[in-house]
Image 1: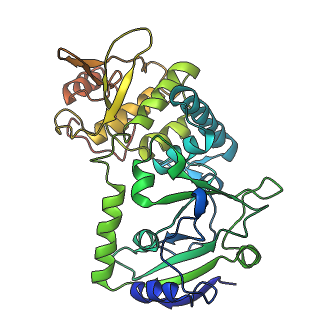
Image 2 (image 1 turned 90 degrees about the horizontal axis):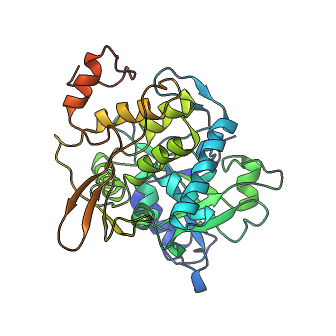
Length: 356
């Protein structure tokens, strides 16, 4: 039995929601954060297809991008938990903020993404070229007790760039049994008051929402976009290499960008002032090259490739500009060519590198 109630255009969806006809009969503002930092009355989620279920990413079938091998939930969950603990320790985050950071930068977690802005939900619902239908959920936040908990990312002091652009909230959907709940289950949707609507996009409207999605997901001005890749490398340095399947998934999923920051002094404990968004020239940083070398450094399948790294610095009179590539991150293609000359093949078949 489908939970989709009706199909509307994006304009009609916004108008009907504002009028209250989609939200219990009361006139409703499109965005209203609750008093004293409480969650808004309504949250929204957009999906580009009518998926059979609505579960957190860690509860969906996880497969390697190369050969489709299944990754067990417990394995993926243990790696996620190790990264959460490391982020909390290294950056003084609380576990909810750390989970949100991992979620928004591509790793599987137990969090479902929601937003307080219906236009953002429509941007994620906008379909590809071959279809004209997307799907949006409206969820009241006053019926979640015992089913789920809302994470308000606006209360965090760190790593808010993507969450801020998306006006994002997280939903930890664990019921009393400890199992994730499916928001497309008819009984669950009825109990929580979740309403799902189909949205039909014209080509022009879809293009406009695709541009909005590109803007709120853009890496260019995000100072934290490269941090997760570095954190994974640090995790490997501390605890050892990852299962090959997890390394494949991480290398493909995590944004490929350098981490750049300013520090005042080099001592036993570095004092990082801030991370910065810097557009790296293509010759200095190649995303496909980065994916390949990250996989090699993270995967237990290649024990001979060490993740131990170096740092490049550019100094002036008062501060140090720090680039954080480890052994291969950020190097030019000559390094890769030398590595290939030793007879080592590119391990990721899907990557087409010019150096080949």
